[in-house]
Image: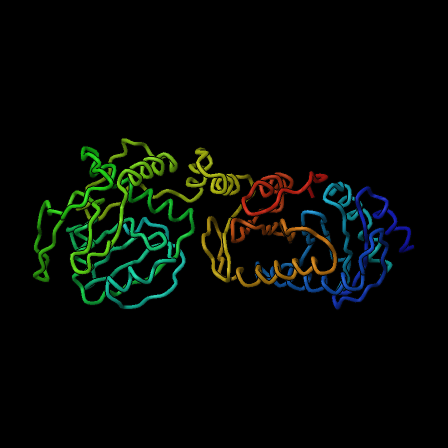
Length: 115
Length: 323
């Protein structure tokens, strides 16, 4: 079931990885086309998400809906699925972010139900 | 005039002589807010070069060389250093220049190489028994008689051109008429809302970075823009308390940059956090960062496009669309 849903993301042109992680950096599920270490990546991303939550809470104790980080060669999009669990997508800057976001909206609830 | 100057970022307060101030501000760009016996004045300094001297005591105003001499005559001056960004410095010079344009509109500009001892145009007695001189020439080049070293240099031709550019840059009319200084220190011009400053910047294609900042604050849905760096808030426009954000924003940027250690990301361009109340966007801006707060419905694609044009970041390849 996980694989089917994650596959919907990985087939989007430009998406190089989709990972479900816990906020302690543990990888729950992952699909990737790139050659990076998703374990290390998850560890770093967990720090980013922690800081993101801190920043969001500074602005009125609001829950984080999504984190979008853009570099010259990659973009990273992350959204919480349920408590302490996030989906993280890495894509090329040329990827259709609107399409990724749409797919995320469509599958977020299903993913959170499975988890 | 003082109350209209950009607030800047306070670095600290202390007491020192004028000579000490000038010799310790070589790397400082901003405002030295001076208090002498309850009256206030300022020195606008750009990297060790004093650009404007101003002091007001009651109805009496000292400017230029006269103000400088008055500061110099004080054994110690109570002052506060307020760091300015490039934009704030421009705004401050714009205010000072607006006053200058009105006050000396009929005064011919002196050659930059001219060195002369300033002859005061008028004198007034202060309640403290001091004789205060007021001069109409604020841009005189002079040398210190004490040590024969240049105390400050002011290329009046450059200054005049810069003043014109600044007035134009700020969208002020060349014919702007200012209220008399002795009428309870009125505003140089009516209080300009920060959003209007953004519009002024937006309408004048003088500086790309500031122009973009002006565009940002005027975008529908943008609530606030703040510029920060090295733990300090540099400039804020709109409804924001930046002090709460600076530290955590820098931590967020540093952790995001940590991704580069795991994969070849290329230079950092921006981070956007979405919360139900809106979006927080942080991107490099010159050597600092700009943080943009928006309402939930803003077109993020539009902001991303503008962020791509901010100075200080590498232009990426074309991206796929808005979030």
